Length: 501
Image (tube, rainbow, N blue to C red; front, side, top):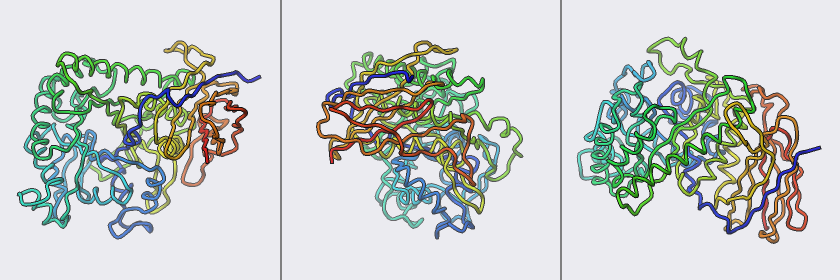
């Protein structure tokens, strides 16, 4: 006998209009993300610029709206000038963050060209580790100023007449971390971020800026860091960043699938801190959240210790994801949508080869990891208004959590397209979940598809040769007199799509 869950959806129970940037991703100069990932000139599928067209097609399938670049830890030692101008004149550098050699074949203009090919905006990070205010304002001038100044004319001389018009910028990366090149205290970082933000906006007042929050919630400086940084930067930035990765090191699936509750709590905590600073400043604007690094990351850490230092684009952080990882990624996406009123940017870290939904073989095919599917489904079908469902369902306790709902779900209403999409994870290990959802407020809607991602083997992975973890559309959701009835198989990711037309 299946367990039972009930849900009510009303058009007026709104969280917020969803900012499409919540489905962003991240490409860092790290491992094979750039070289061998998006760029492999000798590959049979390479275009005239050396970009892999099979990767481009998969990124387009994900409909990624925003890509953070070029780091990550990498950016804190990066001289952006190394990556512009004639490629043959660019220096090879020791890259200290990941102990590799950076060839600088790909830089700002090449990456902007690639982003255009995949229909994505770029979220550009500036180096506030080894560099600072001057390099930051010069990069904004190089990228965004039309012409008639030193750096804008330099861009034009590099063959790029039109400005890139990059809207979103990150003020450094993880500056609270001792591992970071140029690590700073909260006060030190707050001051330099404030001054960098000020002059970057003097160059281009239209840009939006993200200040560095904590590298993760377990940092000893968490909360104090956010408060101090925002105390300095409140008047100059629009966002504070959050980073968080999860893993199932103890092989405890009940606890692992509950980790999205910790993510939810992390988001609520940072909102509270941002609102405290707003109150302290007697401010009028909300500081929104940019969850610009999130994912599962733990599979590859041991093998990364064996990499030969100073090699070029070695296989680093190449987690091979299994079915249970896809379930948690689905819940993390649901968590972001539940906070669409304040989380306006999020970046799945990363996009290709490095803890990524897309993997490539050298001179071979590109292939989809298990986590590709929930990310693709939410990005494609999760555009519109995030709704606030009323849910009642069984709960369970795990090692670190109490009262974990068996059903993790949210819904997105696209009024313009007259579509309603329910995203749902059944966390139950043993049983399917009988869902009854009241959608009488959505008159004339019909079920058009019930997508299910399920697998009997939690550890099942995909590969270049086969894709045993892939969704099917054989779900049994149906509508009777305004009540949606569906069976959600045990341990499954579900996308129930309804439309009026």
